[in-house]
Image 1 (spheres, rainbow, N blue to C red):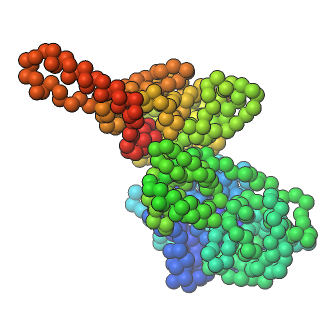
Image 2: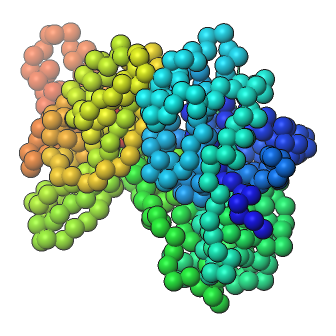
Image 3: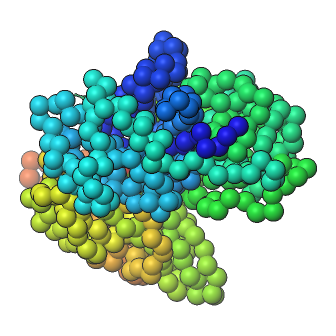
Length: 598
Ligand code: GDP
């Protein structure tokens, strides 16, 4: 096969800018697939993704295109459209030589598009820029072109103007792909090097690994080696995506396809890893493989003990298909047995929760998410802690480090002030710099602790900007930070499950909020219950729940004072007893409300 006739591309587009529609038009135009088949294929995706308009990833597709008397093979690889999955985006790009940059003319360039475009440039991809939806009456083609020019500095004559809906200009995109995107390189005689850019779990066939072949070839019967783990498997089938999976004799350099080899779960063939031939192995893997760690942690409970096993089984099943999901058993005095889970981000967390509810019909209780802290202990050891309940004691801690991210926001200029104020004053953010994106829009870059943007920031940003601003972030690293653990004591007893980690600047406010909320939610008992928040080795906030008071005086009509006093004494005795033997019963909602406090 002649690699000069292959083009591998991905599409960079913000959600709703028309990626799916464009691919549909391309498939039609090249008569690549029976439209009915195609529909079935696309409908196959998870319901949740469709409903939320957040396709994590669609099937890759190979099309054939006639250009100047030659037949070209174009592979279109999908990239996830959400910031949680940026590592997968970078690996999808690593499987390509080019990218279509598609921007909705009525919306303009969005933050994620900018981030992905820079990622494409870093990956040395050749770009084909196109403004979409030019048929719309409110299309702002010139302004959108200006934004693209600001972004990648190309000539305006190089920006294609298309309507994925009507098909206008779509052929020009295909021509530009052939002309501007370099063909893949590769040597069939070298040992196999195949990049895993995606993997799906199939109930009947095990893991289907999506690969891009760089060197060598792979066919049925070969023994392959997953380079990061050293695990070996025998290839059962190789094939391509039309977009339906279609078996082929073999896969060679430059090609995009799949390998089935009896791999049991996607965690054994992770995105970014390299597959080689076990008998004739490559000496080095492809660059860029990273062990991806969860960024956001929360505990998950089934509510009722009867459902614990079911929740466990469901999580295990989900994990077969979700290599980034992490979980381990945990126990909370209030919520029972559950799991401490790690996610790539908030959306990933939501997706897992929704899939549990829909596919496995298990309602779960999720605690408020938090990040993972790095702690330097007094004895010189280092540890990572993602569960506030497991934080070491203050006197064992030398330093605490927390994860920071580079946050980018694109917004109409009008909202720059409010966004700045929110981030700088409330979220410990530092403005790094700003850039213009076209005439009326600005890109703002901040350095901010991840913890500050994982709860309500996205909603706030949308509210501040009336829905117009968009955001993206990338992990920068760990930095020393003045965070402190707030422990809660109920009736003088520490309750680990209610601990929380906050920055010094917010310790008193959060502590006050916590004790107030708890005092509202815990019902009165026969005795008074102090609720205390402790940090820095002392109590920093307190609220009391007054004791239930039997109306002992009601009978007395104010008459006999000594009798009144006696009764009060008696009641006091009773109270003491209760306190001695008594235990505070805290309703589950109280725990949840507190664990979800913002
Ligand atoms: P994706 O999220 O990027 O895959 O976006 P879709 O392809 O699903 O498109 C989002 C919406 O925009 C759909 O309602 C499409 O019908 C519409 N759309 C896509 N391209 C065009 C276009 O060129 N013109 C118009 N008017 N609508 C379009």
